[in-house]
Amino acid sequence: MRCHQCGAPLKSGMKFCPQCGQAVGENMEKKSAPKIQKPKKRPINFGKVKITAAVVVLILVAAGIGAAALLFQNHEYQSAIDVGNRNLDQKAYTAANASFNEAVRMNDRRPEGYEGKAAVALAKGQIQTAETNLIKAKRRKDTNYGKALRAQVDAAKDQDRDAKSLLNQLAIAERLDRRTAIAGAKAARKIGEFKLGEKIVSRGIKSTQDKSELKRLYRQQIDLYIAEGRSNTAVSKLIDDSAEATGDTGMLKLKKTLLVSRPTFVSKPGHYDIGFKLKLKAGRKSDILYYTTDGSRPNRKSKVYGNAFLLPPGTTTVRVVAYNASGRSGSVLNGVYTVSELSAPKAQDWQDTKLEDMDGVSFSWNAVSGASGYEVQITKNQGDSTETVRPVNWNDQTTSVAVYTSDSGYTLKGKVRAYITVDGKRYYSEWSNEISRDI
Image 1 (cartoon, helix red, strand yellow):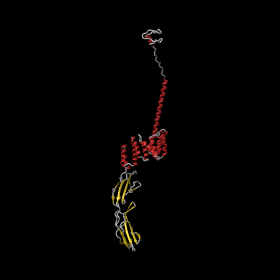
Image 2 (image 1 turned 120 degrees about the vertical axis):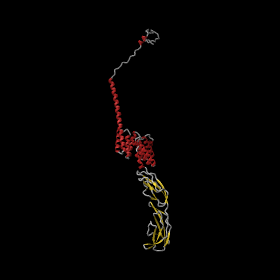
Image 3 (image 1 turned 180 degrees about the horizontal axis):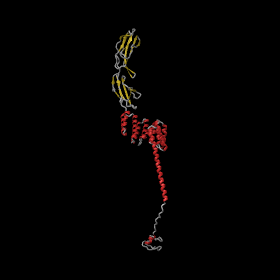
């Protein structure tokens, strides 16, 4: 405690300050304590409050209007993109391009409009235009859709390695929409990377719930299976899966147009006698069968099967493939057939005969089963000279021929061989025994 007069220190119990003599007491201590003054209340300036409130309101209104305007602009932009994509799906390319141009006009800082224009250009085969728009799109943002479209451009320019690099990125993407997956699949098919395309489409299928979008994706996957040459079993299962996933049982009709039935040999491969005709049977009436007999793989340039056909003597490998109405080929059917050789005819004796009241001799032989005809060789031998003689009644379908004998002093010799004609080519037997006749 201190004296309130001079500030000298005071001890407890003192009644007077030793320094200045000022009386010290409870009342004096309370009296000397400084008073705490309460701040005076200032009057509220309602004018300033109104101005501040008005400014805040204006700021909030402006912000709301700006946000609303931005939302409206985004909505209009997306609407233009959606309309463009719908027109693109319908192959209305002029209308689609107009919509994408409108989107770019609204906001040229976003990539979707440029990507849409590139997709239209690709659909029309305008590769350079597509590439130009994709460069602009990438500057705004490098999207998966942009990568898929750039892969298509690279594939069209035979830059397969660049295209594959982009497709590999898509194949490991977490999500792919329908357009991206299909664009990537088309690029993969163009460069022959079918399995890579299938991976990309599978990503799209896993990322999509919309039934109509799934239907498009499954159809693309089916096309990839066919292009890759997958078996009927694999294609059939994929069609079943697509029908279940989309709820569209109408997709099962694809089996009739896409699956190719396997042809069959009516006569099983094995050994057969000369003159054997091979008959084939298509699995479906609408299928067209093509076959080869030289061991090569049949295709649409091979012979078309119509009716049963002769197989030549010896061993022949027959290969058959069916093409369905959609132009898809099935697996090749192979069969090895061995046809016995033609037996050689047996020549008989020469016999005297009359040819238009002239003397002659005839040469005959036995018929050979399965032969298409015969080739006869008759020679006139006199001393050291040999002359071929043509029979008067030459006919390679008969088993007997005759020659004139107007002079004497020579020897006639005759022999014969059979032949069979297959596809315009003759296959001969061995020559028969040779029979002589002195004239």
